[in-house]
Image 1: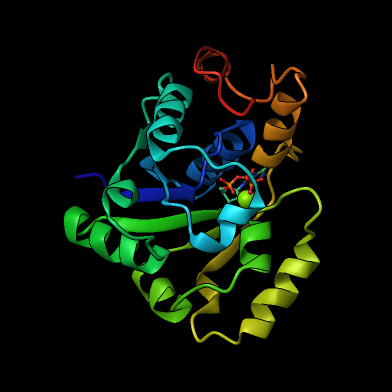
Image 2: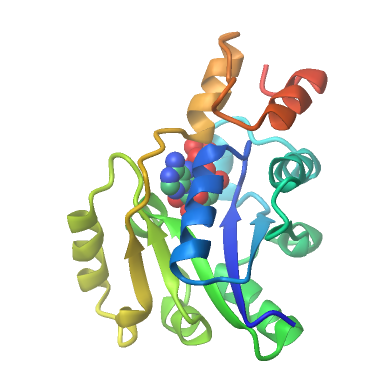
Length: 202
Ligand code: ATP
Ligand code: MG
């Protein structure tokens, strides 16, 4: 069993270089042995945000994107569950599977700032670190302010991580595809080919 695991959750609709950069930077900075990418079931409140394709396609694209990195793995843990999972439930489940392995969660600054995290206190108890990667448009000071406002007993486990700015989002990728614009260099080539072959997001 590895000693330290990083978990990167997301919709990955589709996965892109921003996700890979955040995972890679967190892995190096926090000495994580492996990163597990876990595509999520889509929560009902997000289905109105745009076209969300099946978990099957999102998972395959995640596998294609990480295939060249032996430290990156993908997991079907959340997709296999019948209902939308909270991160805290997923991490509790992983703690059972991984035993003594220390688990850290990786997210982008927008996710911490914009969303209310279910049972964040318990989530932080379970985690070694809750790593929050910077993202264009979300400043470190906004992030610090949000962390203070949350008034958490174990806020010290939340670790902002400055990463090279990657101004890419799945929303923008979907928008470009819909308009027939290229997504080359926004996603790994294998993901790009998969999108075209399966006529996704058009
Ligand atoms: P969408 O536009 O559909 O919301 P997204 O690009 O935000 O897609 P998600 O699947 O929502 O991608 O993100 C998964 C995780 O990766 C989130 O924690 C998000 O904050 C983080 N993330 C996504 N893109 C970046 C980026 N460019 N830089 C840093 N973190 C990112
Ligand atoms: Mg997002």
